Image 1 (cartoon, one colour):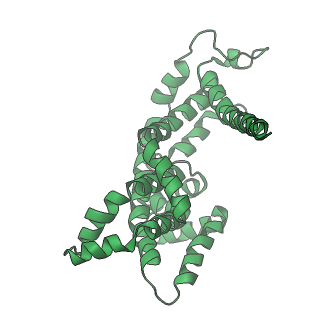
Image 2 (cartoon, rainbow, N blue to C red):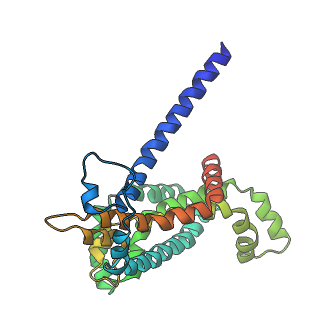
Image 3 (cartoon, rainbow, N blue to C red):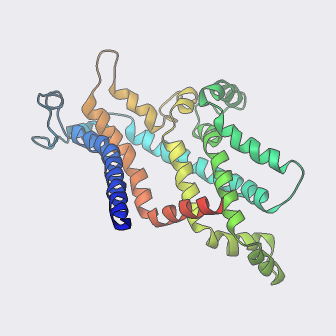
Length: 278
């Protein structure tokens, strides 16, 4: 009887996993397929997955006749700047919340978490006025700073959970051996927390890489326009060039997939350990 239940459980589990994979992979494959078709073939009936011939003109136009290359560089600068700042300040705050006891600690922890619940649309107007007053409208650094409102709260909580899972005795032993506070971070905590750093880094980069609303408010020229904004170039009031739009979507997705493939072991390990330690 137990073997029968285990078999049913296994079948149901695999069915759910297969369904989840199909739901996630299906639109990605359709985007890739559409990016390799001419317009006539995209709207042909019946629809077909595999293009009759690989139409690379969509990619050529994306790279040579649009602002995608410039926006690609802008997005790299914005997302990595935002991620580095989030890691530094979120890491220090998360460490402080995990290790030190002080008045208002619980309120500060709750405040950091609740700030994640504020809709982006509510913050866009204040962000614009603040950035305008300090001269950072239409600048990559201004957009990166505003993106901290998305990534910093979760980065802080994730780091807090990881630090709380590191035995305090390790730090005490290092202090007894003569480690200063900077050495404690660089020689002890950072090597131990590589999976956590990988996880929070990928999270912060993706948050900034995919963000549209704030960048749309603060960006004025191609000098600060990020990739999500450049996608609007391929649609007009009367029509949408689906081939070029899908080609641009593939180009935007490749860096995120490539980064994840490089650090997937650290990412999975960081997510798992963080869940347990929380």
